[in-house]
Image (cartoon, rainbow, N blue to C red; front, side, top):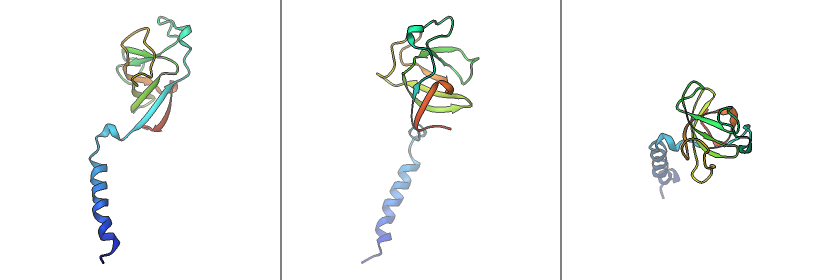
Length: 120
């Protein structure tokens, strides 16, 4: 009877090939909840109240392309400095008062409580 390691070797090789061939997006399994913004009942777009801005890039100088609200759930898949690259999870974000439904872009990390395996 051959040693057990001979039987295990093909499985280890297959597992290693599978792990290295996954797309980069599959590496992270990170969700975030919008926190620390005023409730939507205090919404005022002109004053910046009641929402978290979704921007085209990782910084306050980038254009706002959407907004998310306290309690919305985001899929987080990137990070640059103090900014997360994220998108609204389908069915887990409120209907927007401004901008497109399910916006995707950059949000400030101070207003997103993350969980799971997240970008650092």
